[in-house]
Length: 165
Image 1: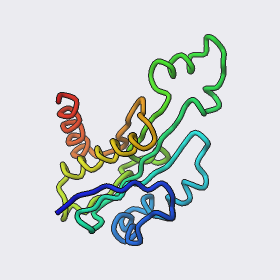
Image 2: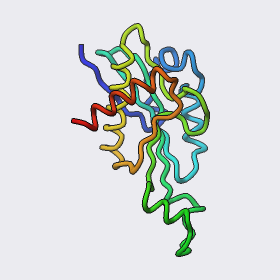
Image 3: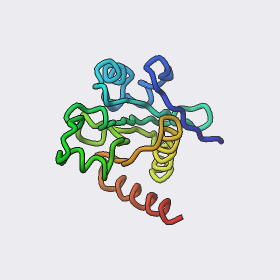
Image 4: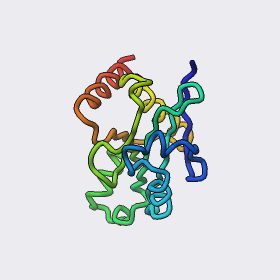
């Protein structure tokens, strides 16, 4: 069977079965929450969803967010010695978050682990990162946010493999 990842940019693109599959255990991944995020997001933040499929079956989903610090008003101060501007120019102007920057805890994704293994799920998340950067531009910094230790260890292991190849 074929695996695929679909990016969702607007609430009207959310698959009909999203809430029944992805959000059934976490309201912070619901279509309604995504709609509220899109309607209230600050100018420097964008919210996206990724839908993960095995064949035609939705098996998971994730939220991704970008923060553009060039558009964040505290960082628009043009003062020569502004430490925020100095650090921003040397570290990151565009941040991609795999997860939800607005809440704590593992609220950034859901996979039906009866249909996919944790390492396969992490590969889906990595693919979503690749696809979103291909669509909207490369991030200066990527943050996988608030994952429980077993999941974070798998992410760390897979990312190390990616960087070594």
